[in-house]
Length: 278
Image (tube, rainbow, N blue to C red; front, side, top):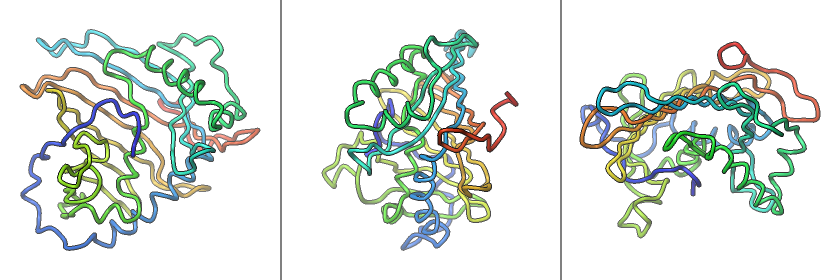
């Protein structure tokens, strides 16, 4: 189960999805290769700390004018919990809000390690709540990268796949999240429709969309090409948008930019440039 994504529900059909070729009887080899890579991608992420810039925008629904904007800068890591090795968690230490430092935000490797322990549940909740409390309404996201677990291992066989240009379009036809299999249809593991792109054997982009509570949410996730030393695609830029199901005008947009990846340890070494050259 993917935890903490703020809104969930049935996805709507992506425009043009039904124009693709016939569905495959089993997952194509490029998709099966990706399914084998997901575990390695997530395992390697626990050895890295990144800088994350989260830009939140709220629109005037009558004019599409931006009426509120906020930027959160954080240290970011994905790692398993010690007591539950299969349970991944997104750790986010908010360092700045709109360029102003958050008191006590300076953290070191020992802080990330401590938060993985069973005894740190309350602290994990406090750290997460700090991000929520400093965010604009409807603009905070948690554990979004863990959407990738939907395509891990045998999970890819829960989908039918169609090739369309550089993208693989998917439709979930079995497995967790399907209502007639006894799962909650609002489960975050319920992905009826979406698409992903693979370039040179590596994941580059995932797009998906769903409707819940009268709101349509669409998410686009871009990843870096693999680079030494870890040789995995890493989060580069995510954009999450919401709008009312009754019309096209946007309600909010949250953009995540990742960079300044450092090896996780007592001393860290910059691996890539930070977002925006900072």
